Length: 238
Image (cartoon, rainbow, N blue to C red; front, top):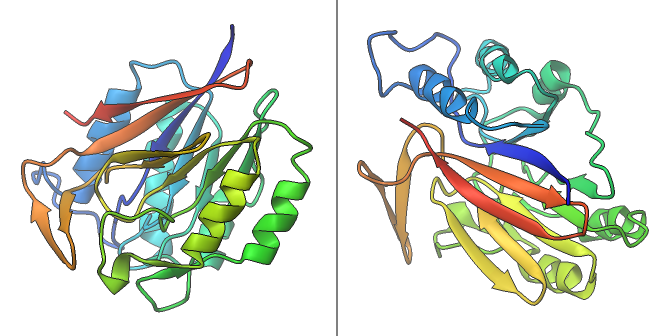
């Protein structure tokens, strides 16, 4: 059995001006350490799921690309609520990546100048109709399954999306960011997987959320196998 390996990096939050190089907990250093941790794995692509630049700057977005390009594989990016869609597309392009035997559907959930997100169900329905029954991975910033009840961490249309993807028997995984907290929930045949932030962790409890200094940070690694199965593992940032 062969597999296609994708690293998901999320919520990097670089800014226009680089953080102090001596600050090992700054966003720049944390992204570099996350990339270093991923070097130990044979990768075929990298997926960036939003909040690439904390201040929506093209400079911060470009530095993320420069750091992640060190992995030497194609990069697919979708924006988060801190990003400007046009800038993400300008820096990373709009081309996807070919996964043998699979489809990757990238969904933009951004509402400009708004923390929470929205999914266009009609567009997603059309995208899934073109997968022709191939096993499918969906990537987006705002999670349709969330650990939080706070409005900032919600996705408008989430229940409709969950209903849609679980009805499509070929959808195997929905991967997201935004929460800065890793999680995995299985509904029918679909794995809903949340990616940690490369910078800092958050713990969500109901309507409250706090920075978790001892929380998990890093990235996720996915294997899309040619028999249609999907596995994942968290990668700890040193």
